[in-house]
Length: 452
Ligand code: IFM
Picture (tube, rainbow, N blue to C red):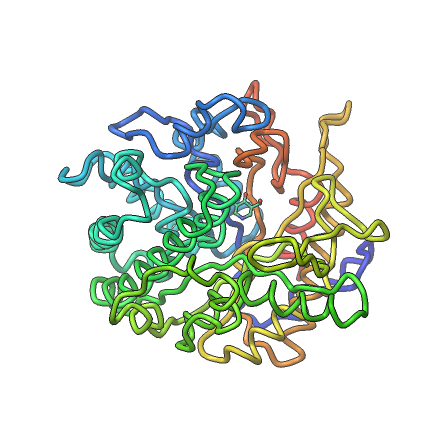
C-alpha cells in the first residue's frame, strides 16, 4: 500500500526486506528510579542538582518512569511494528563503587528488558555508555583519568558476558563529541568543566576505551557486531568566500574527522592537531592502533548541518557557527535539512568505506501539546521523519551501505540541559500522569511499517 497523504511518496518496500527499523532511547533520559535497586548517582544526578545547569531545574530522577513501565513501553514499540530497539545500560546500576562486585539487581533489570525485547520481535541494540558516568569515577578524575578506561572495560566485560548472545549489536559509546566537548569544553553537560585540553584528553580516553572494548565484546559474545555512534554534522560555509570555505575545513577537522579518521586508522587529522597545538591530548604508544580496532558498523546520529564562517578571534578553530535566517527550523532552532543527511551518509560511505552504516539517531524537537480530543498532531515531526527516511532511501540509491534507521526517540524524555522543555518523542509523555500517547508522527511510522 502506498500512503497517499505523505509529503513525499515513500514506502517500506523501497528498502531491503532485512532493513532494521527501530527507535533509540537512553537510560538516564527515560528510566527514572534513580535511587532504586542499588543504583548510585551518576554525573548527571550531580549536574542536575546544581542550580542553573538544567534549564527547567529538573533531573532524570523520575523521567518517563521507564524502570517501572518498561513492559508498556516495549509493547508500544512492538505495536508500532518496529523490529529493533536501541537502549542504553546505566553503568551506575551495574557497579556502585570502584572495587564493587556487579549489582545483581541492575544486571537483572537489563536481562529481563532484553528478554522482553526478544519476546516482542525487537532486536536489542545495546549502548554501553550514553553519558551517565558513575559519580564515584568522576570523583577520581572521570574520563580524563586512564583508570576510567579500565573501569569501562570491566563494566563492558561484565555486561557483555551477562547479556551474552541475546544481544548481537553493541554500541560502545554514544556521541563521544558530547561526552568530551559539552561535558568538558563548553560545560553545557555533566560534569560541566570548561577546559579544551581536558576535553581533548577525555575525548581521546573515551576513544581508547571504545577500541579496547571492541575485541573484548567480540570475545564474550560469539557473532557480536560492535560499533560506535557518532554525532556527525555536514559542515557548510556561511558564504562562497575563500575564508569561509577554509573555515569549513578547520571546523570539519575537529567536529567530524577527529573521530572518523582516528576510528578508521588514519590518526587524528593533521589540521586539527595544528589548530589545537599544545592542547592536544597525551597519546600513549598503542593508543591509535587500539582506537582503530575494526568495527562491524558505524552508527550515524544526524540532526542538522552546521554553518560556519571564518572567525580569526575564536580559539582554536578560528570558526564561528552561524544561523542563517532563511532556513526551516524545528522549535529547538535546529535546521531541518534532509539533504544534509543524504550528503553526510554519502560522504561517510565514500570516505570511510569499511563496515555497515546505521542511522542510530535522527529526530526533531517541537513544542507539542495535547489537543482537546486527546491527540497530539505533530505534523511537523511527521514531515521531518518522512523527509529524512526519503533521504536515507536516496543515500542507499547512491550506493551507501545503510542497513537500518533508529528514530530518536520512542518517548519524550529528559533532554539533558534543556530538561523536559524539549520533546523529541514519537510518543507524548503526559508527565503528571505518565500517560503515553502515540503522536501523529508515531502513528505515521507505525502505518508506514505495517503497510502491505
Ligand atoms: O537526546 C539526545 C540524545 O541523548 C543524544 N543525541 C541527541 C539527542 C537530542 O539532543
